[in-house]
Image (tube, rainbow, N blue to C red; front, side, top):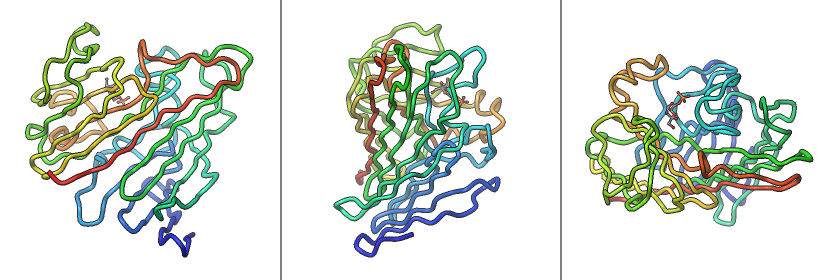
Length: 290
Ligand code: TA6
């Protein structure tokens, strides 16, 4: 499929594990999205390094999460008795329902979460997801409470970013915010650093922050900007050595080339929707030279 006016193209091919994959080309960039989890696994601007990390050890099979790219997390974040870690969004096949051109000549793809999949303990809800591919990547995760009772849910775009060397990366934009430290009994702590440098395992939920976060990568000589709307939580995660070795779908050394900067509404930032209400989470990922 392509559109003469806008020079973009979208092709469906057979991806890893025999899963259907969309290959997107635009005048500025290329991207790949698996229908499985509506999972963006690749985004790269022409002449630059890939922006998203994808593990060389990732599984590609129904019911399993792809390791890397942009996993969709809802309606719960983390562990839940009776359900998979991080919810049901990333382990089900979504349907591509619309493709349209942007004013700039890029392309927006819209996906529908399967309506026959229910989350244990949650009233019925609908989810749709838009991915805009152009000079940057735009993400919009949308929910509607399709029940006649209140719906309280967490959501998160669990994005894995590619970096040159993690010890040469500075993460900026979180100074002055509070975080819950998953490695220290979820203790609440204050972020005092203007630039966060990662030299060990980090697993933090920054709360009540709507700020833009930047990944300053001295090795790849670029800045990745993560802007967000309607997102009050930012999660920062790097598994470091021991957790990498203990994770079968993650290479032992891959922690050196990645960091997760995740945008959503989790923990005390979870949101409650009245019957029929709608809510979105919006993220824009862009890069500039350093
Ligand atoms: O976002 C950080 C986190 O919650 C970590 O605690 C770690 O579990 C990570 O997500 C990956 O979870 P997954 O279920 O994808 O292995």
